[in-house]
Length: 278
Ligand code: PAF
Image: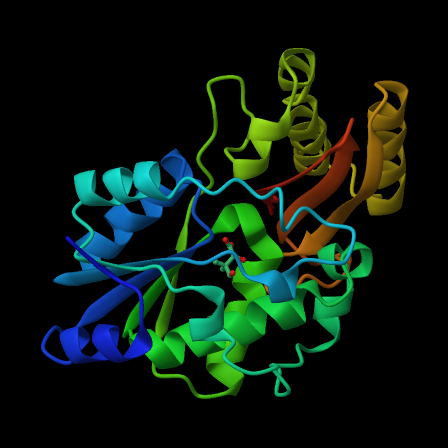
């Protein structure tokens, strides 16, 4: 496995190695990232993974400085999974000058996560497009854990005619149902024990939807109350259509239930897809 720090070195190396499957990350790897690498391995001979904590997608009060940086362990994980090239640029390699141009996501980028993290998807879309331009992959793999991000990257690839197949990886969960996330490292032991409640609350909505209770606002309201009673501070719980994350109407069957909530000082997100019976 090779580690590249600059765009020029990376491009010289990759010129020989197509087709390329790409897994962008911000490091602090867990099993969810490694599962994305395995998907990439199945689809291409050359797997490139990036480690770059992208300042552009953090708000002024968010955890950019505190975001866990675990480069050595990340490289060991990538090496074990057969990654061919790690691209781990310094910030000045990606942003050598103020980033005046940006990718403006469509209105869905201001909803759900975007409503609580203004500018987040603009920052994500901009760095993902830059990384796509630098790495030049034919395939790129993103996790369903960040469902809205996956949808926005897919829409960007489609609408900007990027010749890249965007592939989705399933959310990887701990035995108690908690979705793996770098931010789980922030949880105190008592919070870690409480954390699976978010997934359970979303799963309860899925059960009720399948049982024919399709009053989304009532289901969302009850879920928010459940979390609040358990001393969470929920940002949102929403039942949406999988295809475009718009509100679900009576005939819609392919749904996703998404939630974001604060547990102490840690913000957790999760989602569950659900197909309603005919
Ligand atoms: O999902 C992430 O880790 C980041 O948003 C990504 C896609 C690597 C862009 O910085």
